[in-house]
Structures are given as C-alpha cells and as structure tokens.
Image (cartoon, rainbow, N blue to C red; front, side):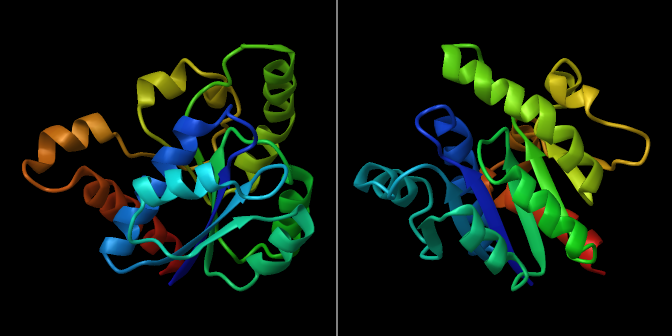
Length: 200
C-alpha cells in the first residue's frame, strides 16, 4: 500500500499540524507503510522546514518538499490512498477536481483544529477552509479527528452529514491504553486500520 500525505505548511499557521502529520508518517514508516509526503506552501522548502521534518520524522526519507498544485495532483494517481491534513491552504479546487476524476482512490481527511484568528490572513485561511472543507469531507472516504469532543465543538462537525464516515484516533486515550508502546506507532497502527478498511 502506497500512501501520499498532503500536509499544510504555508507560513507559520500550520506548524502544529505539520509536526503531528510528520510524527504520524514516522510511526507509519516504523510499522512498514510506504508513505510519502508533500507540503502545501508558498516558496521553496526552507532549511528550517527540512530540519523540523527531520526532528519529527527522522526515519522518513520520502519527504518531497513543497510542490505546486499542478505537480501535486499529477502525482496523486500513483498512490493507493491520498491523506489530506486540514485545515490547510492551497490546491483545494485541484484536489476536488482530481478526486472527482479518480473516485476509486480513497481520500482520507484528518481534521486537527479550527484556524485561530490571529490576523487578517488567518481570517482568509478560515474562510478558505469554511468554503472548501465541506466539499472535501463529502468526497472523502473517511474523516479522521483526534478528539471527538473537540471535533464536535469545532466547525469541522458542521461539515459532516450522515454519509460521511468519522474515525476518532485520540492520542490521549491511546497513551492511557498502550503502556510502554510508542504513541506515534500506536496512532500509526490505528491509522493503518483505517487505511486497510478502505483498501480491502
């Protein structure tokens, strides 16, 4: 199974999401999943971003860096599963168009949190996600969240409908359950179960 992760990285609005997504990739890599990643950002991949990725996912060598939207969607067909980490900025319309043309390739959308209002640009990002996330949720095979209560109180819950499947992978609960196992690996194992349910 080959999985591509699309990870937000525009400016510094998504640092926590990027970190969590690359930690997931590290865990997936450790349990043998062939996972690669692109970041959605503006400009070249900085040394600071590469250092951050190396810290969060030291064994992941399949980080493709930042790509343009056209290059991104051109590569998606080469994977068994596409995993989008949200909220994000960039390429939404192209991902939606790609998914409509490739309905048999599962789309997993992980929703982490609201976009906090910090400045005018964060308001733009919030509106961007308000417009595109309902469409992406509707096209997804499954929406993943980390905590059901947080998800319910966020705008993400407002994007759900009866036809959208929700999977909760709660790191805090996993930490209580797993004892001495690596939390990254436990989250990755739960994520792999989600992936397997889409492929089989």
